[in-house]
Image (tube, rainbow, N blue to C red; front, top):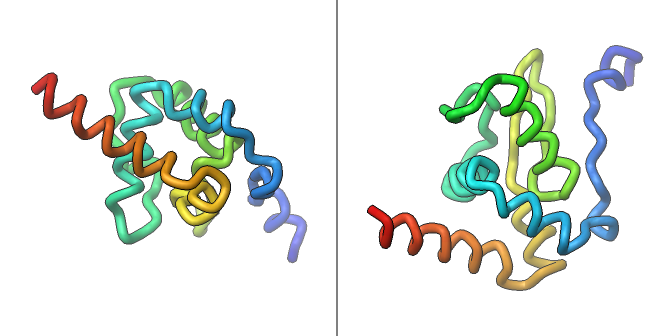
Length: 114
């Protein structure tokens, strides 16, 4: 790994370091929940630019950092593009049913409010 590669590596919590309260906090924000919902239905990793969010670029960066630092997403660089993937398997192993329950509840709320 070159020095440049190291500079492009983002810190992620190991699975054993992921805390329930951090995941719940990350998912409690409507923007972060929207990002998580989009990732949950995507077969591919999604670039940050894929998301059309109602916030500034700096606020978008903050939301992705909260999701990454809480262990909800894994971010990797491909060239200059930052890709996002849901850490579904790890979250399911740690908190069985939590992610699916939150996603199902969010979809039900969206339908109810539509």
